[in-house]
Image 1 (cartoon, rainbow, N blue to C red):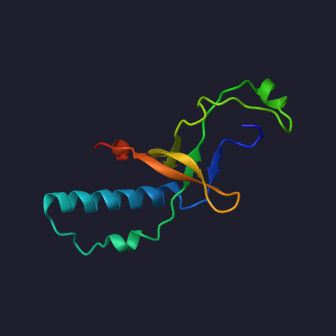
Image 2: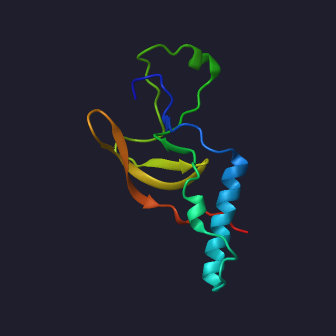
Image 3: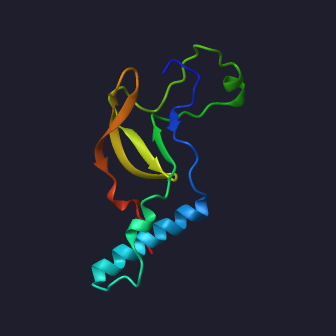
Length: 125
């Protein structure tokens, strides 16, 4: 990576952490009720489809002393803990939910092709 930008790409801020937790709990309750065969009591998953979540694609990480950070200039290289070709992490509200590969989309835009869904992203009760 040859820019001083942070390695995360981020979409505009979404809901508060409390709203995100409430939406997540509602989804988990719906899934649990469906698994147990109970009918949801007037709740509809469609109501959650418009909830915006914070999505980040993490290329890698690095820790460095503040002194080294202050020496960075335009064109400085920050080594990350990943190799070229390694999958990137897809984080939703600071939880790892998937991994994928960077792909070129329209023009000079990039995107992520999902490679694997992390199945244990739901919290254990």
